Image: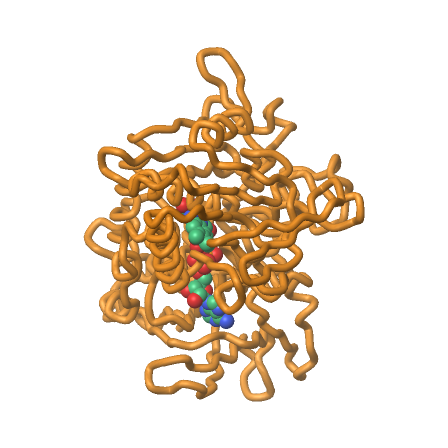
Length: 489
Ligand SMILES: Cc1cc2nc3c(=O)[nH]c(=O)nc-3n(C[C@H](O)[C@H](O)[C@H](O)COP(=O)(O)OP(=O)(O)OC[C@H]3O[C@@H](n4cnc5c(N)ncnc54)[C@H](O)[C@@H]3O)c2cc1C
Protein backbone atom coordinates (compact mmCIF):
# COMPACT_ATOMS: atom_id res chain seq x y z
CA UNK A 1 0.00 0.00 0.00
CA UNK A 2 1.46 3.33 -1.06
CA UNK A 3 -0.05 6.71 -0.27
CA UNK A 4 0.93 9.55 -2.57
CA UNK A 5 -0.01 13.09 -1.61
CA UNK A 6 0.22 15.94 -4.12
CA UNK A 7 0.09 19.47 -2.70
CA UNK A 8 -1.34 21.90 -5.24
CA UNK A 9 -3.65 21.43 -8.22
CA UNK A 10 -2.07 23.88 -10.63
CA UNK A 11 -0.18 23.08 -13.79
CA UNK A 12 2.52 20.91 -12.18
CA UNK A 13 0.51 19.25 -9.38
CA UNK A 14 -2.55 18.48 -11.47
CA UNK A 15 -0.33 17.03 -14.22
CA UNK A 16 1.48 14.87 -11.65
CA UNK A 17 -1.79 13.63 -10.14
CA UNK A 18 -3.39 12.77 -13.50
CA UNK A 19 -0.33 10.81 -14.62
CA UNK A 20 -0.02 9.03 -11.26
CA UNK A 21 -3.65 7.92 -11.45
CA UNK A 22 -3.28 6.84 -15.08
CA UNK A 23 -0.07 4.88 -14.50
CA UNK A 24 -1.26 3.19 -11.31
CA UNK A 25 -4.49 2.07 -13.01
CA UNK A 26 -8.17 2.39 -12.16
CA UNK A 27 -9.11 2.73 -8.51
CA UNK A 28 -10.74 -0.74 -8.57
CA UNK A 29 -7.57 -2.41 -9.91
CA UNK A 30 -5.02 -0.08 -8.31
CA UNK A 31 -4.99 -2.16 -5.16
CA UNK A 32 -3.94 -0.33 -2.09
CA UNK A 33 -2.27 2.68 -3.72
CA UNK A 34 -3.89 6.05 -3.14
CA UNK A 35 -3.39 9.40 -4.84
CA UNK A 36 -4.60 12.41 -2.85
CA UNK A 37 -4.52 16.01 -4.04
CA UNK A 38 -4.62 18.84 -1.49
CA UNK A 39 -5.44 22.28 -2.86
CA UNK A 40 -7.22 25.28 -1.34
CA UNK A 41 -9.17 26.11 -4.50
CA UNK A 42 -12.13 24.05 -5.66
CA UNK A 43 -11.40 25.02 -9.28
CA UNK A 44 -8.58 24.56 -11.74
CA UNK A 45 -7.46 27.69 -13.58
CA UNK A 46 -5.73 27.83 -16.98
CA UNK A 47 -3.69 30.84 -15.83
CA UNK A 48 -2.22 31.79 -19.25
CA UNK A 49 -5.72 32.68 -20.52
CA UNK A 50 -6.30 35.03 -17.55
CA UNK A 51 -4.70 37.58 -19.89
CA UNK A 52 -7.77 37.37 -22.14
CA UNK A 53 -10.12 37.52 -19.14
CA UNK A 54 -8.24 40.65 -18.07
CA UNK A 55 -9.17 42.43 -21.30
CA UNK A 56 -12.75 41.12 -21.41
CA UNK A 57 -12.19 38.72 -24.33
CA UNK A 58 -13.00 35.68 -22.18
CA UNK A 59 -15.12 35.20 -19.09
CA UNK A 60 -14.08 33.63 -15.80
CA UNK A 61 -15.92 30.41 -16.68
CA UNK A 62 -13.84 30.00 -19.85
CA UNK A 63 -10.66 29.56 -17.83
CA UNK A 64 -11.74 27.62 -14.71
CA UNK A 65 -13.55 24.35 -14.02
CA UNK A 66 -14.32 22.38 -10.84
CA UNK A 67 -11.69 19.84 -9.85
CA UNK A 68 -13.80 17.44 -7.82
CA UNK A 69 -15.68 15.75 -10.73
CA UNK A 70 -12.39 15.18 -12.59
CA UNK A 71 -10.78 13.64 -9.53
CA UNK A 72 -13.80 11.48 -8.86
CA UNK A 73 -13.61 10.10 -12.42
CA UNK A 74 -9.88 9.47 -12.12
CA UNK A 75 -9.98 7.84 -8.68
CA UNK A 76 -8.04 10.66 -7.05
CA UNK A 77 -8.97 11.74 -3.51
CA UNK A 78 -9.37 15.48 -3.18
CA UNK A 79 -8.99 17.58 -0.06
CA UNK A 80 -9.99 21.20 -0.54
CA UNK A 81 -7.46 22.41 1.97
CA UNK A 82 -4.13 24.15 2.27
CA UNK A 83 -1.02 22.43 3.49
CA UNK A 84 0.58 24.24 6.40
CA UNK A 85 3.36 21.96 7.69
CA UNK A 86 5.45 18.99 6.60
CA UNK A 87 6.66 16.27 8.91
CA UNK A 88 9.09 14.19 6.83
CA UNK A 89 9.85 11.88 9.81
CA UNK A 90 6.25 11.64 10.95
CA UNK A 91 5.44 12.02 14.62
CA UNK A 92 5.29 10.02 17.85
CA UNK A 93 2.40 7.93 16.50
CA UNK A 94 3.60 7.04 13.01
CA UNK A 95 7.06 7.40 11.45
CA UNK A 96 5.75 7.75 7.94
CA UNK A 97 5.92 11.27 6.52
CA UNK A 98 2.93 13.47 7.22
CA UNK A 99 1.52 16.77 6.11
CA UNK A 100 -0.76 18.99 8.19
CA UNK A 101 -3.62 20.52 6.26
CA UNK A 102 -6.38 23.02 7.07
CA UNK A 103 -9.64 22.73 5.13
CA UNK A 104 -10.87 25.64 3.03
CA UNK A 105 -14.01 23.95 1.68
CA UNK A 106 -16.00 20.69 1.44
CA UNK A 107 -18.06 21.84 4.44
CA UNK A 108 -15.04 21.56 6.75
CA UNK A 109 -13.58 25.09 6.66
CA UNK A 110 -10.96 25.54 9.37
CA UNK A 111 -10.77 21.84 10.33
CA UNK A 112 -7.27 20.40 10.60
CA UNK A 113 -6.08 16.97 9.48
CA UNK A 114 -2.76 15.13 9.37
CA UNK A 115 -2.29 13.10 6.16
CA UNK A 116 0.31 10.32 6.06
CA UNK A 117 2.28 9.78 2.88
CA UNK A 118 4.85 7.47 1.34
CA UNK A 119 5.57 9.97 -1.44
CA UNK A 120 4.91 13.70 -1.36
CA UNK A 121 4.87 16.10 -4.31
CA UNK A 122 5.04 19.78 -3.37
CA UNK A 123 3.46 21.68 -6.28
CA UNK A 124 2.12 24.62 -4.31
CA UNK A 125 3.19 27.26 -6.86
CA UNK A 126 3.72 30.87 -5.84
CA UNK A 127 2.51 33.03 -3.02
CA UNK A 128 1.59 36.34 -4.60
CA UNK A 129 3.67 38.73 -2.49
CA UNK A 130 1.76 41.98 -3.04
CA UNK A 131 2.86 43.09 0.43
CA UNK A 132 6.48 43.37 -0.82
CA UNK A 133 5.58 46.75 -2.34
CA UNK A 134 3.50 49.26 -0.40
CA UNK A 135 0.14 49.85 -2.06
CA UNK A 136 0.59 47.11 -4.68
CA UNK A 137 -2.27 44.86 -5.76
CA UNK A 138 -6.06 44.64 -5.76
CA UNK A 139 -6.18 45.42 -2.01
CA UNK A 140 -4.05 48.48 -2.71
CA UNK A 141 -4.01 50.74 -5.74
CA UNK A 142 -3.14 48.50 -8.69
CA UNK A 143 -4.67 45.56 -10.52
CA UNK A 144 -3.48 42.02 -11.24
CA UNK A 145 -4.28 39.19 -13.66
CA UNK A 146 -2.68 36.43 -11.57
CA UNK A 147 -6.02 34.82 -10.66
CA UNK A 148 -9.22 34.62 -12.69
CA UNK A 149 -10.98 36.89 -10.17
CA UNK A 150 -8.19 39.48 -10.35
CA UNK A 151 -8.46 39.38 -14.13
CA UNK A 152 -12.24 39.96 -14.05
CA UNK A 153 -11.64 43.08 -11.95
CA UNK A 154 -8.90 44.28 -14.33
CA UNK A 155 -11.28 43.86 -17.30
CA UNK A 156 -13.96 45.90 -15.52
CA UNK A 157 -11.51 48.74 -14.83
CA UNK A 158 -10.17 48.61 -18.36
CA UNK A 159 -13.69 48.96 -19.68
CA UNK A 160 -14.11 52.11 -17.58
CA UNK A 161 -10.88 53.49 -19.08
CA UNK A 162 -12.29 52.82 -22.57
CA UNK A 163 -15.51 54.66 -21.64
CA UNK A 164 -13.52 57.68 -20.43
CA UNK A 165 -11.42 57.65 -23.60
CA UNK A 166 -14.61 57.54 -25.66
CA UNK A 167 -15.75 60.61 -23.75
CA UNK A 168 -12.56 62.33 -24.93
CA UNK A 169 -10.53 62.14 -21.70
CA UNK A 170 -6.83 61.28 -22.06
CA UNK A 171 -5.78 58.23 -20.04
CA UNK A 172 -2.43 56.83 -18.88
CA UNK A 173 -2.10 53.08 -18.47
CA UNK A 174 0.85 51.29 -16.85
CA UNK A 175 1.39 47.55 -17.18
CA UNK A 176 4.34 45.63 -15.81
CA UNK A 177 6.19 44.43 -12.78
CA UNK A 178 5.37 45.64 -9.27
CA UNK A 179 8.81 45.00 -7.76
CA UNK A 180 12.45 44.78 -8.82
CA UNK A 181 12.62 41.03 -8.23
CA UNK A 182 9.45 39.97 -10.06
CA UNK A 183 9.28 37.09 -12.50
CA UNK A 184 6.71 36.36 -15.25
CA UNK A 185 7.66 39.31 -17.49
CA UNK A 186 6.12 37.35 -20.39
CA UNK A 187 2.68 37.69 -18.79
CA UNK A 188 2.99 41.48 -18.43
CA UNK A 189 4.30 41.68 -22.01
CA UNK A 190 1.22 39.79 -23.20
CA UNK A 191 -1.12 41.90 -21.18
CA UNK A 192 0.26 45.24 -22.39
CA UNK A 193 -0.17 44.25 -26.05
CA UNK A 194 -3.66 42.90 -25.41
CA UNK A 195 -4.58 46.21 -23.77
CA UNK A 196 -3.12 48.03 -26.79
CA UNK A 197 -5.20 45.80 -29.09
CA UNK A 198 -8.42 46.45 -27.15
CA UNK A 199 -7.83 50.21 -27.25
CA UNK A 200 -7.23 50.09 -31.01
CA UNK A 201 -10.34 47.94 -31.54
CA UNK A 202 -12.35 50.51 -29.61
CA UNK A 203 -10.90 53.29 -31.78
CA UNK A 204 -9.53 55.18 -28.76
CA UNK A 205 -5.81 54.38 -28.83
CA UNK A 206 -4.79 57.94 -29.81
CA UNK A 207 -5.90 59.40 -26.46
CA UNK A 208 -4.16 56.70 -24.41
CA UNK A 209 -0.53 56.64 -23.28
CA UNK A 210 0.56 53.07 -22.60
CA UNK A 211 3.67 52.24 -20.55
CA UNK A 212 5.40 48.90 -20.01
CA UNK A 213 7.25 49.24 -16.71
CA UNK A 214 9.66 46.39 -16.09
CA UNK A 215 12.57 45.21 -13.97
CA UNK A 216 14.24 43.86 -17.15
CA UNK A 217 17.38 45.86 -18.02
CA UNK A 218 16.57 45.46 -21.70
CA UNK A 219 13.49 44.57 -23.70
CA UNK A 220 13.24 40.90 -24.64
CA UNK A 221 15.09 39.71 -21.52
CA UNK A 222 11.98 37.86 -20.23
CA UNK A 223 13.93 36.79 -17.14
CA UNK A 224 15.97 34.35 -19.24
CA UNK A 225 18.75 36.79 -20.23
CA UNK A 226 17.16 37.26 -23.65
CA UNK A 227 17.53 34.98 -26.64
CA UNK A 228 19.45 34.97 -29.89
CA UNK A 229 17.47 34.04 -32.98
CA UNK A 230 18.90 33.08 -36.38
CA UNK A 231 16.95 33.82 -39.52
CA UNK A 232 18.28 33.14 -43.01
CA UNK A 233 21.86 33.13 -41.74
CA UNK A 234 21.55 36.37 -39.72
CA UNK A 235 21.52 36.49 -35.95
CA UNK A 236 19.26 38.89 -34.13
CA UNK A 237 18.54 39.38 -30.44
CA UNK A 238 15.18 39.09 -28.73
CA UNK A 239 15.87 42.70 -27.64
CA UNK A 240 15.77 44.03 -31.22
CA UNK A 241 12.87 41.75 -32.10
CA UNK A 242 10.83 42.89 -29.10
CA UNK A 243 11.78 46.57 -29.40
CA UNK A 244 10.36 46.70 -32.92
CA UNK A 245 7.00 45.50 -31.61
CA UNK A 246 7.03 48.23 -28.93
CA UNK A 247 7.84 50.89 -31.55
CA UNK A 248 5.23 49.60 -33.99
CA UNK A 249 2.49 49.67 -31.33
CA UNK A 250 3.61 52.85 -29.59
CA UNK A 251 4.05 51.19 -26.19
CA UNK A 252 6.56 53.13 -24.08
CA UNK A 253 9.04 50.98 -22.15
CA UNK A 254 10.44 51.93 -18.73
CA UNK A 255 13.36 49.57 -18.17
CA UNK A 256 15.34 48.44 -15.13
CA UNK A 257 12.68 49.66 -12.72
CA UNK A 258 11.89 48.69 -9.13
CA UNK A 259 8.47 49.84 -7.94
CA UNK A 260 8.88 51.29 -4.45
CA UNK A 261 5.31 52.34 -3.70
CA UNK A 262 1.93 52.59 -5.37
CA UNK A 263 -0.47 55.30 -4.28
CA UNK A 264 -3.92 56.15 -5.61
CA UNK A 265 -3.12 57.01 -9.25
CA UNK A 266 0.68 57.27 -8.80
CA UNK A 267 3.46 54.71 -9.07
CA UNK A 268 6.84 55.55 -7.53
CA UNK A 269 9.87 53.66 -8.82
CA UNK A 270 13.65 53.61 -8.84
CA UNK A 271 15.68 52.79 -11.95
CA UNK A 272 19.06 51.09 -12.33
CA UNK A 273 20.87 54.45 -12.48
CA UNK A 274 19.67 55.08 -8.91
CA UNK A 275 17.21 57.85 -9.84
CA UNK A 276 13.68 57.98 -8.43
CA UNK A 277 10.56 58.72 -10.47
CA UNK A 278 6.80 59.10 -10.13
CA UNK A 279 4.27 58.37 -12.84
CA UNK A 280 0.59 59.30 -12.68
CA UNK A 281 -1.80 56.67 -14.01
CA UNK A 282 -5.48 56.02 -14.60
CA UNK A 283 -5.02 52.25 -14.84
CA UNK A 284 -2.17 50.10 -13.52
CA UNK A 285 -1.77 46.32 -13.80
CA UNK A 286 1.42 45.44 -11.94
CA UNK A 287 2.37 41.83 -11.16
CA UNK A 288 3.62 40.96 -7.67
CA UNK A 289 6.88 39.18 -6.85
CA UNK A 290 6.49 35.49 -6.05
CA UNK A 291 7.58 33.56 -2.95
CA UNK A 292 6.99 30.09 -1.59
CA UNK A 293 3.64 29.53 0.10
CA UNK A 294 5.22 29.45 3.56
CA UNK A 295 5.06 25.80 4.62
CA UNK A 296 6.72 24.96 7.95
CA UNK A 297 8.64 21.71 8.52
CA UNK A 298 9.24 19.69 11.69
CA UNK A 299 11.37 16.67 12.53
CA UNK A 300 10.11 13.56 14.35
CA UNK A 301 10.49 15.28 17.74
CA UNK A 302 8.67 18.42 16.63
CA UNK A 303 11.89 20.46 16.15
CA UNK A 304 11.67 23.18 13.49
CA UNK A 305 13.54 22.14 10.33
CA UNK A 306 11.91 24.66 7.98
CA UNK A 307 15.30 26.15 7.04
CA UNK A 308 16.60 22.71 6.05
CA UNK A 309 13.81 22.10 3.57
CA UNK A 310 13.14 25.60 2.34
CA UNK A 311 15.24 28.50 1.04
CA UNK A 312 14.62 31.92 2.66
CA UNK A 313 12.31 32.69 -0.30
CA UNK A 314 10.01 29.89 0.94
CA UNK A 315 10.74 27.73 -2.11
CA UNK A 316 11.77 24.14 -1.49
CA UNK A 317 15.37 23.02 -1.82
CA UNK A 318 15.82 20.15 -4.28
CA UNK A 319 18.76 18.50 -6.06
CA UNK A 320 20.27 21.79 -7.28
CA UNK A 321 23.69 23.25 -6.49
CA UNK A 322 22.84 26.15 -4.19
CA UNK A 323 26.45 27.20 -3.55
CA UNK A 324 26.73 30.99 -3.77
CA UNK A 325 28.91 31.82 -6.81
CA UNK A 326 29.68 34.83 -8.99
CA UNK A 327 27.49 35.13 -12.10
CA UNK A 328 30.38 34.08 -14.37
CA UNK A 329 30.70 30.76 -12.51
CA UNK A 330 27.06 29.73 -12.79
CA UNK A 331 26.65 26.53 -14.76
CA UNK A 332 23.71 24.86 -16.44
CA UNK A 333 24.57 21.81 -14.33
CA UNK A 334 23.63 23.76 -11.16
CA UNK A 335 19.95 23.28 -12.07
CA UNK A 336 17.99 20.37 -10.58
CA UNK A 337 17.16 17.25 -12.59
CA UNK A 338 15.08 15.00 -10.35
CA UNK A 339 13.34 17.56 -8.06
CA UNK A 340 14.05 15.24 -5.14
CA UNK A 341 14.57 16.91 -1.78
CA UNK A 342 18.01 16.21 -0.24
CA UNK A 343 17.89 13.68 2.64
CA UNK A 344 14.19 12.86 2.05
CA UNK A 345 14.12 11.23 -1.36
CA UNK A 346 10.38 10.53 -1.12
CA UNK A 347 9.64 14.28 -1.30
CA UNK A 348 9.70 16.22 -4.57
CA UNK A 349 9.09 19.89 -5.39
CA UNK A 350 8.01 20.86 -8.91
CA UNK A 351 6.90 23.91 -10.89
CA UNK A 352 7.27 27.22 -9.13
CA UNK A 353 7.56 25.48 -5.73
CA UNK A 354 11.21 24.43 -6.12
CA UNK A 355 13.99 26.86 -5.22
CA UNK A 356 16.01 27.82 -8.29
CA UNK A 357 19.79 27.80 -7.68
CA UNK A 358 20.27 31.29 -9.14
CA UNK A 359 18.64 33.78 -11.51
CA UNK A 360 18.99 33.15 -15.25
CA UNK A 361 19.03 36.81 -16.15
CA UNK A 362 22.19 38.72 -15.13
CA UNK A 363 21.61 40.05 -11.59
CA UNK A 364 21.83 43.82 -11.31
CA UNK A 365 21.66 46.42 -8.56
CA UNK A 366 20.91 50.11 -8.83
CA UNK A 367 23.69 52.52 -7.89
CA UNK A 368 22.07 52.77 -4.44
CA UNK A 369 22.14 48.96 -4.01
CA UNK A 370 18.52 48.05 -4.81
CA UNK A 371 18.29 44.65 -6.49
CA UNK A 372 16.58 45.10 -9.86
CA UNK A 373 16.78 41.73 -11.56
CA UNK A 374 14.12 39.36 -12.89
CA UNK A 375 13.77 36.13 -10.94
CA UNK A 376 13.92 32.96 -13.04
CA UNK A 377 10.60 32.03 -14.67
CA UNK A 378 9.24 28.52 -14.38
CA UNK A 379 6.61 28.68 -17.05
CA UNK A 380 3.78 26.27 -17.77
CA UNK A 381 5.54 23.86 -20.07
CA UNK A 382 8.52 23.11 -17.77
CA UNK A 383 6.13 22.95 -14.79
CA UNK A 384 4.01 20.30 -16.51
CA UNK A 385 7.10 18.35 -17.59
CA UNK A 386 8.42 18.34 -14.00
CA UNK A 387 5.03 17.11 -12.72
CA UNK A 388 5.05 14.21 -15.16
CA UNK A 389 8.73 13.43 -14.44
CA UNK A 390 8.23 12.96 -10.71
CA UNK A 391 5.05 10.94 -11.36
CA UNK A 392 7.15 8.54 -13.49
CA UNK A 393 9.80 8.32 -10.75
CA UNK A 394 7.24 7.53 -8.06
CA UNK A 395 5.49 4.88 -10.17
CA UNK A 396 8.86 3.21 -10.98
CA UNK A 397 9.70 3.12 -7.27
CA UNK A 398 6.36 1.62 -6.38
CA UNK A 399 6.84 -1.07 -9.05
CA UNK A 400 10.57 -1.75 -8.74
CA UNK A 401 11.48 -0.67 -5.23
CA UNK A 402 12.71 2.57 -3.66
CA UNK A 403 16.16 2.33 -5.27
CA UNK A 404 14.77 2.74 -8.82
CA UNK A 405 16.63 5.56 -10.56
CA UNK A 406 14.75 8.86 -10.70
CA UNK A 407 13.59 10.28 -14.03
CA UNK A 408 15.34 13.50 -14.99
CA UNK A 409 14.19 16.74 -16.60
CA UNK A 410 16.54 19.68 -16.08
CA UNK A 411 15.55 23.13 -17.29
CA UNK A 412 19.09 23.21 -18.68
CA UNK A 413 18.14 20.41 -21.10
CA UNK A 414 14.51 21.25 -21.55
CA UNK A 415 13.02 23.46 -24.22
CA UNK A 416 10.06 25.74 -23.68
CA UNK A 417 7.57 27.27 -26.03
CA UNK A 418 5.99 30.56 -25.12
CA UNK A 419 3.21 31.95 -27.23
CA UNK A 420 2.74 35.49 -25.95
CA UNK A 421 -0.58 36.87 -27.08
CA UNK A 422 -0.33 40.34 -28.56
CA UNK A 423 -4.08 40.74 -29.08
CA UNK A 424 -7.08 38.42 -29.34
CA UNK A 425 -9.24 38.11 -32.46
CA UNK A 426 -9.61 35.34 -35.06
CA UNK A 427 -8.80 37.68 -37.95
CA UNK A 428 -7.07 40.60 -36.25
CA UNK A 429 -5.26 38.88 -33.37
CA UNK A 430 -1.54 38.27 -33.18
CA UNK A 431 0.99 36.61 -30.93
CA UNK A 432 4.72 36.51 -30.44
CA UNK A 433 5.62 32.84 -30.53
CA UNK A 434 8.99 31.99 -29.03
CA UNK A 435 10.69 28.67 -28.54
CA UNK A 436 13.91 28.31 -26.61
CA UNK A 437 16.18 25.35 -26.10
CA UNK A 438 17.26 25.05 -23.37
CA UNK A 439 15.46 27.34 -20.92
CA UNK A 440 18.62 27.76 -18.80
CA UNK A 441 21.38 28.82 -21.20
CA UNK A 442 24.31 26.42 -21.46
CA UNK A 443 27.37 28.26 -22.78
CA UNK A 444 29.45 25.09 -22.61
CA UNK A 445 27.29 23.61 -25.39
CA UNK A 446 26.12 26.62 -27.38
CA UNK A 447 28.07 29.86 -28.11
CA UNK A 448 24.87 31.91 -27.66
CA UNK A 449 23.74 29.82 -24.67
CA UNK A 450 20.97 28.14 -26.67
CA UNK A 451 20.52 26.07 -29.81
CA UNK A 452 20.07 28.42 -32.76
CA UNK A 453 18.06 25.74 -34.54
CA UNK A 454 15.48 25.39 -31.78
CA UNK A 455 15.39 28.97 -30.44
CA UNK A 456 13.06 30.97 -32.64
CA UNK A 457 10.71 33.91 -32.61
CA UNK A 458 7.78 34.69 -34.92
CA UNK A 459 5.08 37.35 -34.63
CA UNK A 460 1.78 37.12 -36.47
CA UNK A 461 -1.84 36.05 -36.67
CA UNK A 462 -0.81 32.34 -36.81
CA UNK A 463 0.58 32.71 -33.29
CA UNK A 464 -2.83 33.84 -32.05
CA UNK A 465 -4.48 30.74 -33.51
CA UNK A 466 -1.84 28.53 -31.84
CA UNK A 467 -2.42 30.29 -28.50
CA UNK A 468 -6.18 29.80 -28.82
CA UNK A 469 -5.72 26.15 -29.79
CA UNK A 470 -3.44 25.64 -26.76
CA UNK A 471 -6.17 27.10 -24.54
CA UNK A 472 -8.68 24.45 -25.66
CA UNK A 473 -6.11 21.61 -25.80
CA UNK A 474 -4.83 22.24 -22.27
CA UNK A 475 -8.31 22.53 -20.81
CA UNK A 476 -9.20 19.23 -22.56
CA UNK A 477 -6.05 17.71 -21.07
CA UNK A 478 -6.65 19.08 -17.59
CA UNK A 479 -10.20 17.71 -17.62
CA UNK A 480 -8.69 14.29 -18.33
CA UNK A 481 -10.86 13.88 -21.42
CA UNK A 482 -10.18 11.00 -23.89
CA UNK A 483 -6.60 10.97 -25.14
CA UNK A 484 -5.55 13.72 -22.68
CA UNK A 485 -2.20 12.07 -21.97
CA UNK A 486 -1.25 12.21 -25.68
CA UNK A 487 -1.19 16.02 -25.48
CA UNK A 488 2.35 16.94 -24.48
CA UNK A 489 2.96 19.00 -21.32
C1 LIG B 1 -1.03 36.05 -15.72
C2 LIG B 1 -0.12 34.91 -16.01
C3 LIG B 1 0.00 34.46 -17.33
C4 LIG B 1 0.84 33.39 -17.62
N1 LIG B 1 0.96 32.98 -18.91
C5 LIG B 1 1.76 31.93 -19.20
C6 LIG B 1 1.88 31.47 -20.55
O1 LIG B 1 1.30 32.03 -21.48
N2 LIG B 1 2.65 30.39 -20.78
C7 LIG B 1 3.30 29.75 -19.77
O2 LIG B 1 3.99 28.77 -20.02
N3 LIG B 1 3.21 30.16 -18.48
C8 LIG B 1 2.46 31.23 -18.19
N4 LIG B 1 2.36 31.66 -16.90
C9 LIG B 1 3.08 30.92 -15.86
C10 LIG B 1 2.32 29.67 -15.44
O3 LIG B 1 1.02 30.03 -15.04
C11 LIG B 1 3.07 28.99 -14.32
O4 LIG B 1 4.32 28.59 -14.83
C12 LIG B 1 2.39 27.76 -13.79
O5 LIG B 1 1.08 28.03 -13.37
C13 LIG B 1 3.20 27.17 -12.66
O6 LIG B 1 2.62 25.97 -12.28
P1 LIG B 1 2.65 25.50 -10.76
O7 LIG B 1 1.95 24.20 -10.73
O8 LIG B 1 4.02 25.58 -10.23
O9 LIG B 1 1.83 26.62 -9.97
P2 LIG B 1 0.28 26.97 -10.09
O10 LIG B 1 -0.24 26.62 -11.43
O11 LIG B 1 0.13 28.37 -9.61
O12 LIG B 1 -0.41 25.98 -9.04
C14 LIG B 1 -0.19 26.06 -7.66
C15 LIG B 1 -1.27 25.28 -6.95
O13 LIG B 1 -0.95 25.16 -5.57
C16 LIG B 1 -2.10 25.48 -4.80
N5 LIG B 1 -1.66 25.91 -3.46
C17 LIG B 1 -1.26 27.12 -3.04
N6 LIG B 1 -0.95 27.09 -1.73
C18 LIG B 1 -1.14 25.82 -1.32
C19 LIG B 1 -1.00 25.15 -0.07
N7 LIG B 1 -0.56 25.78 1.03
N8 LIG B 1 -1.31 23.83 -0.01
C20 LIG B 1 -1.74 23.16 -1.11
N9 LIG B 1 -1.90 23.74 -2.31
C21 LIG B 1 -1.59 25.05 -2.42
C22 LIG B 1 -2.78 26.56 -5.62
O14 LIG B 1 -4.13 26.74 -5.23
C23 LIG B 1 -2.64 25.95 -7.01
O15 LIG B 1 -3.62 24.96 -7.22
C24 LIG B 1 1.56 32.75 -16.58
C25 LIG B 1 1.43 33.21 -15.27
C26 LIG B 1 0.62 34.29 -14.98
C27 LIG B 1 0.51 34.77 -13.56
